Length: 601
Image 1 (cartoon, rainbow, N blue to C red):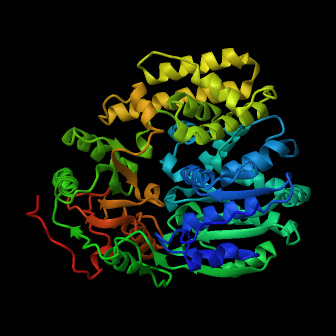
Image 2: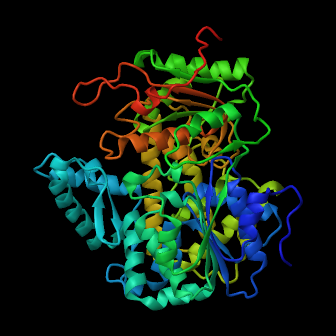
């Protein structure tokens, strides 16, 4: 039965995009219901599949987005057994690398993906051995179809960085390892060298949907386009994003035009748009629209359209007073304006600033809890099977999340099967029953997981030593988790190793969120407080397109809140060569009637 939505679920713009039979290139402004449109499009195309061998593929920028969309589709009552959804890296692993590794020289004898922590450890060691002054930061890179590109290396250190990278790649190859960037490179190699892969995948995929296209890399566009091209018009594409939020340029992300992608994929694509903002007040919309790089007419049409938003910009506060200012703003929003703590987000440009600020906020506001991706007390490598098992271990049976836990169980069984474990007689519900029956009564989070995993393996009759891939994931999960716990404890976070803290990772958001600008993209809150909006940080000092990047970063920050926005460019920070940071130029030059309420609260 074809999926039908209720009247009022979608506006005319969304319906026009969703009902289009061909391929669509959809530009969606912040708060325009982009995720809703994507969700309903997926549900519609799933309901129209006429063969059990066909799939709908949805590629999201983050695992969080994939999880949110999956849950929304499940709530619509549409079966998701023919939906694959995840990041481009997970897509390449599941559909290209694992099935066809035998055809790639680097992968044919087996491989394991190293996480960011392992990469940093290896690079730090190699940089320490280098006779040149080179840092792991200088060695960050990404691939294009033409080869390796360094991210932001100091020009004087490029040759030294490449020398270290060559040693790094050699180390990975000798140990049958690949990193996240090599996932894309190897997938592209296979797609190019084995055209039959694209032809086979194209015969399976009826629709490929891509979220956040503006942050997609050139090599990713090419992987997707080759599959679409091989379909002869049978695989259609639905691409959604906002070029004004293209903030991953230093990592190789960019907003390809409709014309260029159509030519690359060999398909006709119509361009459509969503220009109605349902999230924010008119004042917030007017403010962030001023930072548009690509012209966009955005209309505030939501329930808070006429809300009298507070928008403040503070340049006088000193770095030493920053914590007090953030605490004041948090208290004012909660105690005077009635904003719920979980609807407040504190944003900084980098985790290095956030870690110190978070430690002091936790101490200054003991009555409130704090949440954030960087505050998870264990490894969140989404492609590690033990992270997937931890989701079942740390969530309790609850009818409201039964479908979600069933999906997680299916993912665990799929991963076990790909590692060689015979799971043919175990259903996702069987696995849930097994997990629900495991009773561990210890207070330490890592000890809890170790005992839980051991009990699960015992019940499944799986000897970890007989499955090297599972064992390697196990070691990596716990090593990374111990490092993460130590980092948080060093930052002053209390109770980080407890089971209760571990369970909070998968619980509904309850505390004040702490995030980087890049990490907050896609989220929304009633109030956003952003600090360190300083030239050299926003944008990064090595960014060759500084003004444009600053505008896009500010656009993202300012479009997150529904109601209130507080911007801080604190004085007193000094860069590495002793020069004081100044407010981000694009921000300082924005002529706006900011609210001043220093005496409030």
